[in-house]
Length: 419
Image 1 (cartoon, rainbow, N blue to C red):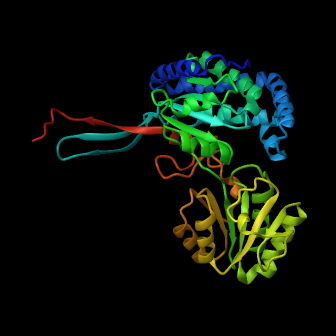
Image 2: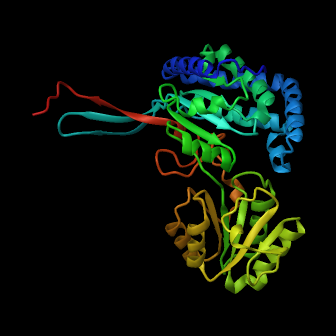
Image 3: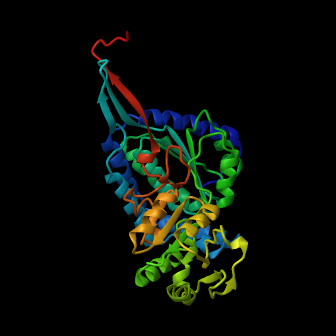
C-alpha cells in the first residue's frame, strides 16, 4: 500500500464525495448482493493470506521500531489462525439477517393512517482505529451489512496489514457488483487525514473511534461529526460474600489474563469484607501465580500497595487493582466514582445483590458470574463489532450492523386529511 500525502484536504474531499455516492446506491442494494460481497471478501482474504502475512511482518517490524508495548504488538499481530478468524467473522456477518428495511414497529391510528417505523442506513460512517488490522474487515463488513458506506483510517502501525485486508474487501464488492467506494481506506499515515474526517460534516454522518484513550479523547474533543465511542474500559469485578469459590477463581483469572490489551479486560477487583481474608485473598494469590501484579488496598496482600491513582486506571497489562468493600452498595459507589460505564461484573450466588447491582449501575454492559472478556460483539451474536459505545444516544454497548442503522417512518393513508 503506497502512502499518498500530496494534498490531504483534496484527497479526503474526493473520498467523501465517492462515499456519499456509494451510500446512496447501497441504501437500496439487495440483501443478496451484500451477502455475496462479504462471502467474496472472506474467500479473497483467505486466498491472499500469504500477502496479508507479509504485510503484517512489515507492520510488526515498524511497531518494534516504535517500541510498542507487548499488548499493542499482540493487537497488531496476525497469523493464519487470526486471519481464519477474520474470514469466519466476515461469513458470520454475511449470514445475519439484513437490518435494512426491517419493520421495528407498526400501528394504525384513528385518523386513518397506517404507520411503520423501519430501519434505514445511517449513510457514511468514518472509522478511526489503532493497531488492530482486523478492524478493517469488521468495520467494513458491518457498515456494508447496514447499507452504509465507510471511510476507514487505520493506525500507522497497521498501515500495510490494513491495506492488504482492504484489497480483499474490494474484491468482494467488485464481484457482487457493488461500488468499490463503499469501503474506502485512507491511503496515508498523515494525521491530517484524521482532522479532515472529524470535521467532514458534509460527507460523514457518524465517527467511530476504536483505540486508546489518547485517540478516543482527541476524537471526542475535536469532532464536529456525531461520535459513537468509549473513552476507557475501566472494568470492575465485585466478589460478593455469596460468591461461589470456583466460579470466582475461573471468572476473575479469565477476565484479567486471557487478553490484557482489550477493553473488556478486568482492571479492578472489589471484594466483600466478609470474604476478603479467605476467598478474596485466594483469588489474589491465584492472579499473582499467573504473573499478574496486584496493587492491593488495605487488608489485602498483593505485590504493591494500591494508591489513589490505581483506582480508575485502565492498565491494559498484567496488572490489577484490588480493594475491600463493605457490601454491594459500597462496590456500586466505587464503580460510580471510578468506572467508565463500559463493563462491570458481579460474582454472587445470592440473587438480591445481583438485582441491586443490575438496578443501581448504568454501565453499557453488566454481567453476573461471567467473564468480562465476553464484552464483545462477536460473543453477543453480532458476528463482530465496530466498537463499544458507552454513551446514551443512539447506540450503546457493542455496535453491530443493527446499531449502524437509524429509522424512518412510512405513513400510508387512503385519502386521509386532517381536520
